[in-house]
Image 1 (cartoon, helix red, strand yellow):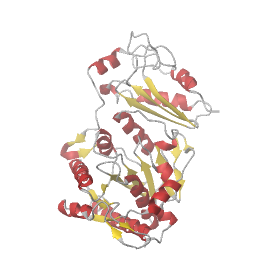
Image 2: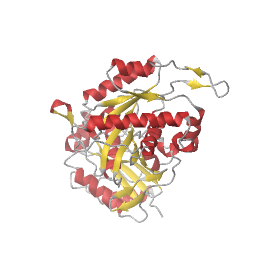
Image 3: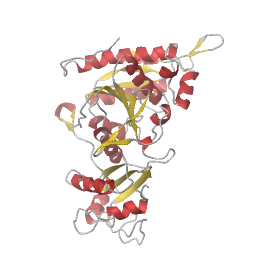
Length: 397
């Protein structure tokens, strides 16, 4: 039987706080405890400037909870801000789990408005990134705004890469709105592969990991940017991905703090920006391309989604959102245009049913459009990676 939240809190009382006098619960450092099917996640508040120094504290808390009966896996993250609504010292209020006396260091950091710094860019625009053994190439599928079909495009692109012979996985990095479990028809929880590692879920031969596997659907994840980045880092580092040619990362939409921090942390080979043809989407997409260029992450190209609609009765093409905007933007910005994807009812049906169109109708014009985009993407990965790799990515025909 999985432990309760109160049992997790009591267990965490065994972990000494930064002052080495009291424990992290009584110091008010533990928050955002989430439980699902034996999977537990929580955050620990520490001063931003001591985050690296206190990493052993995070590891100790993670370890002591993992040792509880019924626990299938644990994600503990460090954050440098108190959650909104948390009581301050001397307020007389206490969260569930026991009385709280906020530590002096945390209070000082909060008073200064301190926030965890994003991973610093190295001289020349380089990035300090984690490394993941066994994954040859990571690509970020991004968008300048929500609502352009980025996640649906990402999963069909991943399956398209698999269809042309590449070992592929997908990481759902959209913590606040994870879509991949539903798009792939996956339920349940990841299994433990070996000590401190999870085995990714799998659908249609595609390996997948998402926060959606770890919390109940519909549960809001009210995390600040640094907590999201920490959780994503663990979903990369502590997952047994095996040997992959490509890991597709479904990025959060927009160019805000989370997308920026993830882009600086994850060692991506390049980025793909998904847009729709109308001007409001193109303007945001240009900003996304500019962000990746500033981070020295090569944009691999542009995908125009919802490009046109083909009537199922008269077979007439209708440009609902205009047409060709993505291709023109790619030409203006000197980027490859990877292809156009139509508005097609089977795409929506596949997303709702958990059977993406590349799987449900692989010979359909729409599925072939995704596979053509995958072929162009594989070529661009090879070009982007060629100076760094002795053997460029190859595609099995």
